[in-house]
Length: 141
Image (cartoon, rainbow, N blue to C red):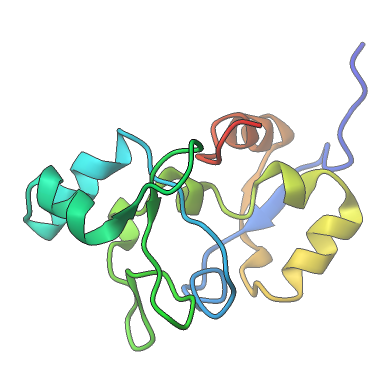
């Protein structure tokens, strides 16, 4: 029998749309070939225009969203939060259920200090969390 993860009873998360994961800290928001047409359609632009305006392709890991000079995501607005929230990339959709955050209880606890939605709201089972980790939108290493 496989060893149970520390979160075997599941974890709670409900996005508060605070923007802490979207702003002020350098990072990358990876976008997939599935994300791009959905976001472009939502913005009412074609995919080529979307890629020219909003995508950076500087390494082999794949396309990522541009950032503002202050490291905010290009789609983060301090007044309204994420302006593409319903169409946000897979990486954003699966936050905070990333391997780095759920690998150890101390990682989850540390991340939750800056994320008011963690340990609140909707309960995810261990199986649901493992599925999110497997398809989190982050580059495979």
